[in-house]
Length: 75
Image (tube, rainbow, N blue to C red; front, side, top):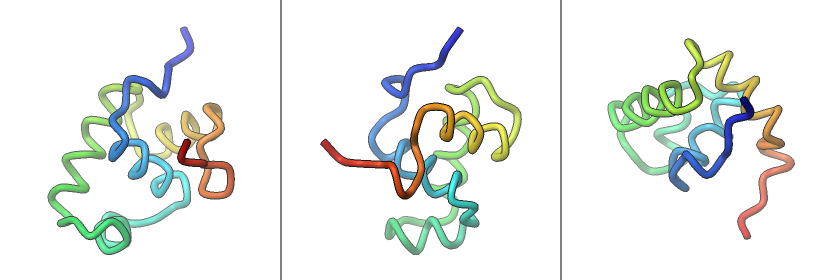
């Protein structure tokens, strides 16, 4: 079953794009202006929602959904 991006909030989607770009929690926190603990909470929810076990799995899912730093567009 294909996962839909609609299960993620806008912020979770932003975090997922950065995970797919191989950014660390610290780098994501800096880029989005939020705390590292908040980033980790987002990452945990993203993994749960996408049904993956790791950041690598989330990055693969992001790529399959066409969510990359280059290909991500805000509508």
